[in-house]
Amino acid sequence: MLGAIKLENFEGLTAMPQKAASAWAAVNAGIVGASYKPLVFVGTQVVKGVNYWFIAEQTLVTHPPVRRIVTIAINEFEGEYTIVPSSIEVVIS
Image (cartoon, rainbow, N blue to C red; front, side, top):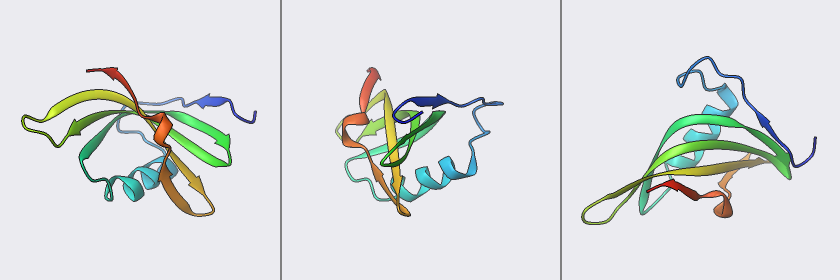
């Protein structure tokens, strides 16, 4: 269904589908000012391309570093990966 988030059936935190892992790897290397560690791959959303939704640990590059749990979506469109800026929401700080 267009726009709906399809929840992923997972077998554990290490069982991330290849396409989601590729999206994560493509974007995470280019982030400046924060680092992200995926905790859970939530699922996909078909929009303009595909959004891969994650729950991740965010560490802000501050002194001292600030760590929090956030949601984050990575969009794949025509072979390009980008973070959906409005998707980064703090769940736990």
